[in-house]
Amino acid sequence: ATLYGYGVDADIVGDGEYTVSITKSSIVGNPDISMINPNVPLDGDVPAAGAAGTVVFCVDIVGLMDGEEVSGLDDSGAWANTPADKNDLDDPSDGVDNHYNVNVKGDYKASDITATVTSIKADGQEIEFDASKIRCGNIENNNNCYRIEIYNSYGNTATDAPLDPLGFTFEDTLEVTFTIEGLGEVKEFPEVTPFFGDSAGADADAEADADAEAPADDAAAEDDAAAE
Image (cartoon, rainbow, N blue to C red; front, side):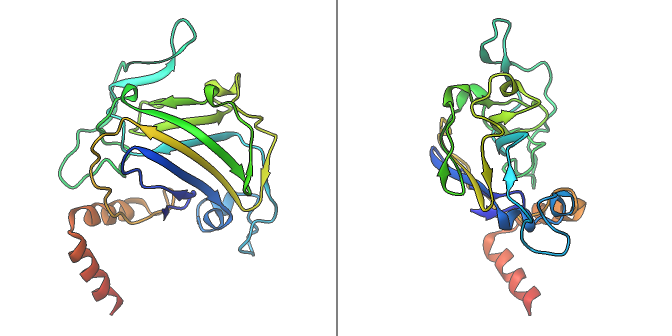
């Protein structure tokens, strides 16, 4: 797992079961959200109080979608994957890897993938939920993320929620375990430089591009030279 700032992520390298989480340290460690998050005191390094309930509770898997389908309710009110009216994603090019750049076409359509949430825990305690009401797919067609929407007050789950959005709190960890199928042979996940929100700007993007282009041994040698 890698700490990207908004939580403890998982590298999705094939079909299987994965766990992702938001933790006290990942919230405090993010210089962007720490400044606006009321649970993080400005003069301390621990949340002032536990988080209560949720407004948007989703897992976004970066790099999967090719933008050719969009997921949502069809005319009959059923959840479906339909052809997208437009595709806002860029074609992959040298030096740009869709595993971390959300604006580049991925390798899959939403209908290729099946994801199922198997567990949600707050501070290690199971939260009750109805897995059949969780919405998955290419819900936002302006990026390449495959979204597992557990609850979104601005989305389809607002009116038919899989869980009680105000029925849980957490002080240390909120974690989601899910299975994913349909990936087949997956490209090797590249080593990228973690960055936080938009604060790193173009410099972070340039660093990530450089890391993606350089062989692992060369990147390690550069790190050693920088340390010296």
